[in-house]
Image (cartoon, rainbow, N blue to C red; front, side, top):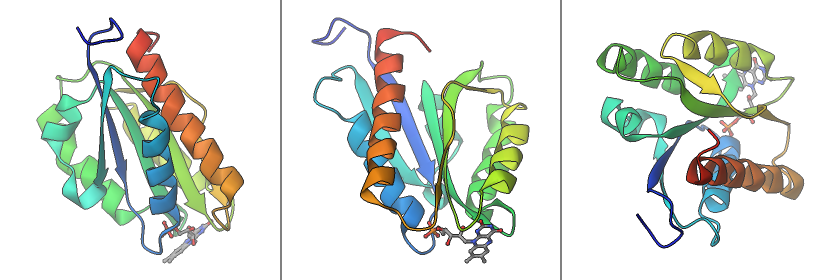
Length: 160
Ligand SMILES: Cc1cc2nc3c(=O)[nH]c(=O)nc-3n(C[C@H](O)[C@H](O)[C@H](O)COP(=O)(O)O)c2cc1C
């Protein structure tokens, strides 16, 4: 037990970013998840190439962030999923997760691809995806903070 009276939960944020937009989103998600009122959630922020099966097995909740590249998720996020699928097979039970995407267009190619693969783990989508088109504005970053806070708060109080 911790101060808030809830058991400690773990939230993993895995992202890739080439030109910085998704990284800015990921950092805002991380800030939100670390909001002062949320005391019983430990948050881990990792680039996709640095994350592995141990991180996924550690997690009680997951946030996946990617740019849309060539109508798909980034190769780095796909690599993370490729590397972790078999080591985690049978060890994950509907892990609560959500997706954030930075795209020049509508982001639906990346979204569809992640959702299809997520069914296999399985991950359970608990929040609508956040898709930012074009520049990463303060409004977008605010929505990212809200996303991180919502996932962390939901984990803390046990609604996910
Ligand atoms: C190689 C490449 C392919 C891209 N393909 C798409 C695409 O298919 N659809 C789209 O909406 N944006 C596409 N974009 C634009 C990126 O998704 C967009 O610039 C995004 O904000 C980049 O995020 P990042 O700064 O985190 O790397 C592409 C960018 C690159 C570099």
